[in-house]
Length: 252
Image (tube, rainbow, N blue to C red; front, side, top):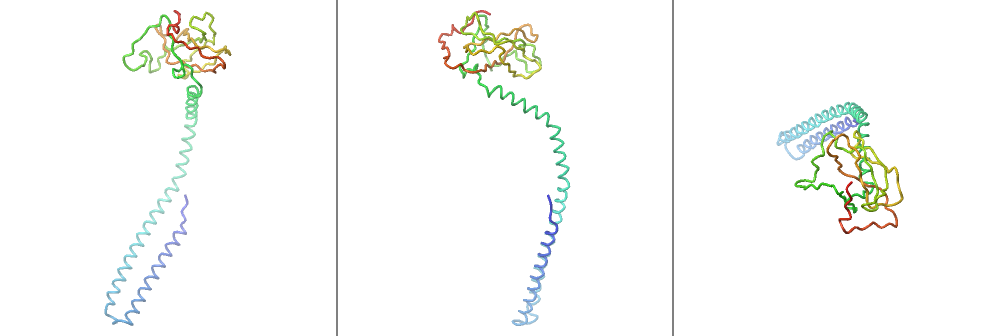
C-alpha cells in the first residue's frame, strides 16, 4: 500500500492558488463597482466584511482539510508499517497449522469416500434388511433408537475385534462363501474399510457377519453399522422373499 505524497502536495497547491485567485477577483470587482456606481465609502465596508467572512470560512475549511490530510497520512504510514508484520505472522500460522489441517482434510475425505462414494447395499433404502438368528433377543425401543451399550468415550471393550464375513444363497446354506476374516483396529478410525480377501464373481443375497472375538467385554459386543460394498452381478435378478419366516437363520 503506497501513498503518493507528491500528488497530495500538488493538489493542495492548486487549491491554495485557486483560493487566492478567487479572493483577488472579488476584491477587484468590488473596487470597480465602487468606482463607477457608488460612493467610494458607501457600502464598501459592508462588502469588505462579506469578503472577510468568506475568506475566513474558506481558511477554516482549508485548515480542516489539511488536518484530515495529515491524519490520513499518519494512518497510511502506520498500516504500511504493520502489513509486513501481519503477513509474517500469517505465514508462520499457516506453516504451523498446515500438517494438522492436511491430516484432518485427508481423514474427512476418507470418511466421505467410504460413506458416500460407494454404494451401500446394506441400507434399507437399497433393499437391505437385518435378518435375525434363532437366538436373537428382541428389545423394545421406548425412546430414541440409540443402543444403551454404546460408550461415548474411549472405552471400547465391547467393540468387535475379529470379524468374519460370509455370503449365503439362502438362510440354511451349508456351504457359505468365506469373504475373509478381519481385525477391527481399536486405535484406528471409527469407520474402517476391509477389502474381501476371497472375492467372487457370484452374487449373494445374504451376507452373514460373525463376531469371533471382541476387545475384552465378557457379556456383549456392540456393532453400530455394517456397510456392504461391491458390484451388482449382471443377469442375476435379486431373490424376492415374501415370507418373513424365510429370512430367519437357524441358531448360530
